[in-house]
Image (cartoon, rainbow, N blue to C red; front, side):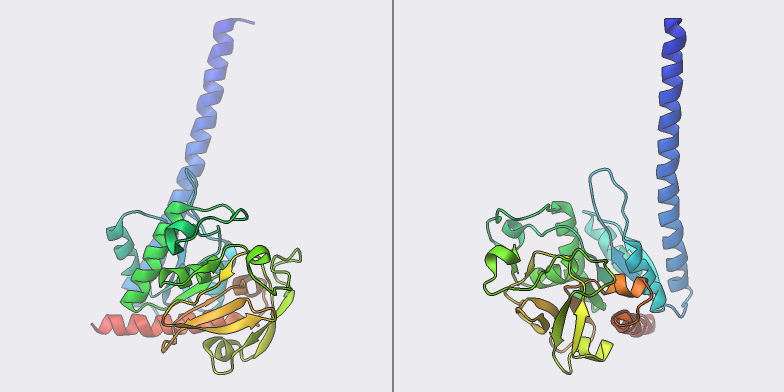
Length: 291
């Protein structure tokens, strides 16, 4: 085989592969901005549906995205979902929050204990994402400071606590005395494997109309010291914090479980959590338009 022909073929193959990779990347970028443009256009035109910002995943060289379960849950609740990409630019973060009516903080990696609540890392600490931590904490503080409704789920629930001065159990099995419930299930996400007890009169109680319910569970960290200004509103039977809310507020709250998985799969048990957020987002959006 002629060496020059072989080398040329390799170059053409590599070039083709690179072009395909670039095209696929551009498709993702175009799709993201198209969704964002549609959502923001609705906002700008005074559309009836509020825009709900969803915090994104983050990784070196990867795309900014959110699990489809969050997107579906927002849509089912009557909102318009928009993914909020991680950024280190505070002006960009401010601009994003000026264009949404509420925020959902999503699940994901463990939270860096040394950086955010002054503890040395436990041997069981999992993967951390420093840039995502910094963005998410800034997003929570700014959103709550501006009066936006905010829902934290799993990691987002833990971050809500940490952002305002709380701390976490870095690893439930080795750090929490008396725990006896399995908090990392192997069953499907839409299936509840342990029960939680909900305070009567709490936001969660009003949202779902229950004072006890079976939830899914995918975590080994949990809220330990509750942040000032917040209160616990639900626990598992071994005492793990499963829900909390900002005292005196109807629009800032978090849950340790994943209600979006149930809601996205057609179950209505936890749909009220998202409907409540969308309703508060509508009120927030209407008040902002009057300014």
